[in-house]
Image (cartoon, rainbow, N blue to C red):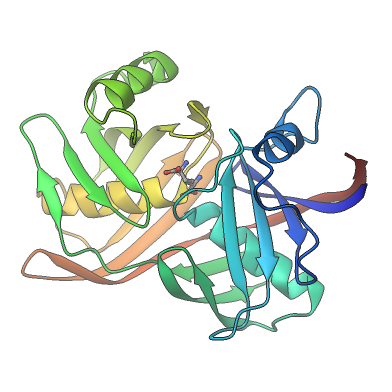
Length: 258
Ligand SMILES: N[C@@H](CCC[C@H](N)C(=O)O)C(=O)O
């Protein structure tokens, strides 16, 4: 078959986006999704996202990691699908869409997408790290020499060592100033370092606040692929009104035989 696709990226976390409003995409074909995401034999991406019709909202987001498996929420993918929905004429500048973790509000101005993330009720503080779920599970750990760290190796050790088969995404963090953090992320399902991870960026902002590394509620995060911001409201250790803010960009579109 000939498949029409669009390629987007958000701070270097890149995705194949497909308009599946006609339900023509074979959703259980893990090998096909992995092939489309393959950087040598396919289009190349960290993940694949389907845009579908939804009864409750403007559209539905279905997310797959590059290993071909459907997964939990993707923050950068969420920002990219908002830009894609606007390009398709499904939305204008404001939207509410449905994803695996529930409804998300978002606004888009030029290429800047502000995406509401889920509320986070529980942030677990351990001796050496923090664990929380921002739509996807995240381990957050402060490290000394972030630039020199072998993220693929150390991330895999923790992902399999602590979290087993289900796994977790692993974020390594270095504070820059009172509300800025540099991060590098190992992504479950990609099983490698990616240039950015939106749910990871969100997790780092909340974890640094919970661990009292920052007292601010407007956090700047520098990823390997660019800058993102997170704002939130905190009350008795629970986080609400959590927003992930940053650019989402169309790269190219095409057709692939598969
Ligand atoms: N890149 C994503 C995270 C995607 C999901 C993750 N790999 C998982 O399976 O937990 C983001 O921007 O949040």
